[in-house]
Image (cartoon, rainbow, N blue to C red; front, side):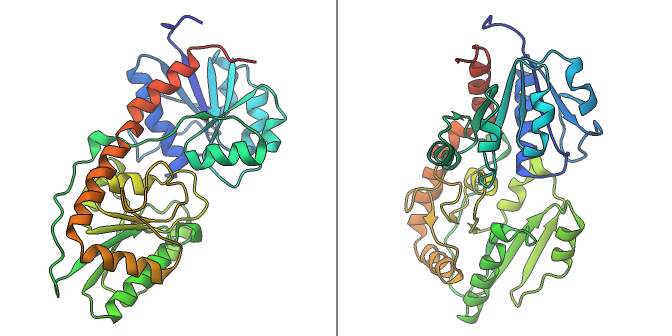
Length: 334
């Protein structure tokens, strides 16, 4: 394949709602287009998202084979048949979900594997014997300026931030809520900051019914390209996630210069304990301890945020897109 060839790239998506695995392809698609390639997102209806300014095309899945694609991506096992029956030259399962049984996909020899984090690379190799391409990242660094953090003043309010998808227990939001309630009981003037874009009635219902004794702000439907405004309102960001593909909120907090406290789930590329953040288990006591540690160690906060921002620079969407294009510009090795 000619290295300079303009590529026709596609992705088959289950919908265009705001989930990390969906946003990934809109971000990458824009980068592919900027690099001079064509990118098409296929869904059952061909609809466009209202929350993202996408530069590529949208077409219904029924038109998947009307283009001679050089490569087509997918992330959902339910879309396997459409991919197998497509005429794309390369068919790539991009691993973003640690719960998927990859053996069902592996039996189709024409399908390749990419992975979006070191966590998932290791799982694919160890559990399924799959050598996935390390398509790690990303983050749009140009959208995130670094907050000039200040020391926490005793007896003054401070803000703890977490992702507000309460309906999904694996996000661990309620562990953060309980930790903040413990801090409040100890006399701290803590405020809780949550954010989300409800994509289902279940998620909206959980938000509507949310209660806590801690003063809180719940920001809904904030423009995704302006999330830095939310992060800059916080003093600390906490992500006690479990079984997640890539910690989008963690990398965004790091890009914003906010000290991060998180579990090891999907942060092997991001969080190194006492270097780029504080590693904790999914336990409100441990979260409380970590927040308390940062409150009284301003120098540590400065060190963590500086190293975190530098560490994530190679994960920028533009660099990831370039790595993927370099891979696609070469024939698949049998």
